[in-house]
Structures are given as structure tokens and as C-alpha cells.
Image 1 (cartoon, rainbow, N blue to C red):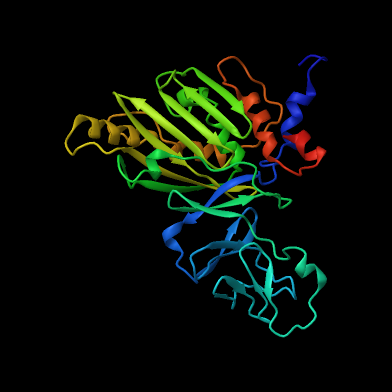
Image 2 (image 1 turned 60 degrees about the horizontal axis):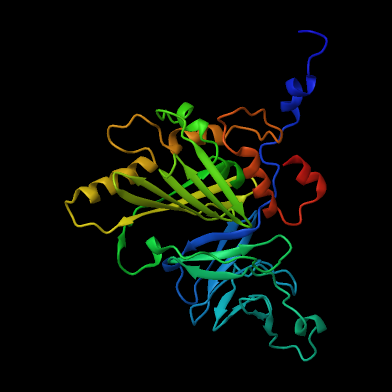
Length: 339
């Protein structure tokens, strides 16, 4: 090599990290609604920590930090749902789904802060699409956008499909989401016949994606929800993707697949089912590989390059990263510089 080599390029990988990101802000799938009955509770891990997930007697879901603000007892071990409150097993302090202390059974003079604000961290929750969703923000800020209306999964009639799946990868949620704009890998990793054109537009927390000039049309609502519609053979099949950040370096991809409720035996029904098979690389007679067999090998072993060497055909990777950076609320300047 000559004297004028760029050592930064050659040695950069020595300082790279796998996942230099904090957990991004947004709405995230917690679990399916029918898995949690009134007065039930359980411990779960999401967003890099443990939480107590519970449902009140009236049916309202709650998700709280597990440690009681009083003396630190873990409310997921021995605690109980009492009416509309989560009760600590240690001294029976009770909290509502917003984290306000509602009862100290023996206290005559309570700490003044109890009357001023919530003292237990809880996450705002909504139930939609037959699922429980939680709003995560590292500094406990309120939601800044709402979950959208998705007719395929909300309308009572017109659509069908019970197929869904869940896959866990050892990577952060941004690396998974970046695949949507990285269309070149479809040919070289998945074995697709070519590299489709891609365009992306961004407005606030929403990204709209068009792959193949209408073949795949998707909308991302923050980092935790993506609706992708595949248009082929005169039909549209829909993939609703809702990835969870379990920790900073572990994510669980969840997907539901829906299509128009065509009559049994019709060519439209056959085409719809084949397109859904194609989404996960399971379509009969196709040579392309699904994400489970190839993407996970890359995700589980790659490191993130904040300054990638890109060429034409790579897709709008840098534009995507700039859009995604808005979800790292509260991150310091040093962290933001790395991503």
C-alpha cells in the first residue's frame, strides 16, 4: 500500500459497536389482548428492563416498573391486582395504571409528593388490533402520535387471515427497520431476480415506502409498527409488522398476515395465500430466501457502521437514518454522534 492510504477506513471496525443505540421512543406491541384476563398479572422484559403487566378488574391494562417506590419490593412477586389497582405485597401500598398511589392502608400522614404526581413509573397503554400497546419514552414524556386505523385488522368484515409469526434476533430495532430501504440486499442476500426501485417520504413519525413502483407499499408509524401491502396478480395482501425492543441488543419481530376475504376456491384466494407465503420466503416454486434463513445470519453477527460507504442502488439509507434519529429522545450528543 502507498503512503497516502486512509487508515480510518481500514481500522474503523476496531471501534465499531454492534448496537450503539438507546431504546427508541414509540408505540410498541406488548402482547395479544386475549392473553391477559382481568385481575391477572405477570412479569415481562421489554425496553431493557423488567415490568409488571397487569389487567384491572374492569379490564384496563397496566404496565409498571416492578419496584415499589416505598421500600423497593418487587410487585410482580407476591403482588396482587385489587380492583383497579396494583397492590404491593410488602405493605399493601396500591397504585393505579397511571402510577398514582391510591391507598396506603396504615398511613395517616403520607409523603407530600404522593398528592402531587405519580410516584410509580407506568407506561401509557392502549388496546388496538386485538393487542396491547405501550408508549415508551426514556424520560416519561406523553405520547406524541397515535396508532393508525388499519382496516385489514380492525374491520369486522371484508378481511381474513389468522396467520402470524414471531422471531427473535440479536440486534437492535433500527438495524431491522433499515432493511426496508436497503433494496440491494434483496437480490444478493435473498436471491431476488433484480434490485427494485425504491422511494421513501418522511413526515414527522411517519415514513412511506414504495418498493418496485407499487409492488410493495408500506407505512411505518414510528419504530414499532409497519404496515406493508403487497400488490400482485390483481390482489393485495397485507403484512402488519410490530417489532419489540427486548433489550438494546435483542429484538422480537412479530407479524400478522391478512388478505381480502375471497370465496374458497377462487384464484384470488389462491393468489393471496401465495403472496403471503412469498413474504416470508415460503412460497412453493420460488428460489428466493426468506428473512428467517438469511437476514438473521447477518443481523446476529454484524456491527453498525455510522459512516457507511454507499453507492448508487443502495437505497435511501442515510435519509432513513436521519428520520429514525428523531426517536432517540434524551440521548446525549456523544451517543447521537455515533448513530
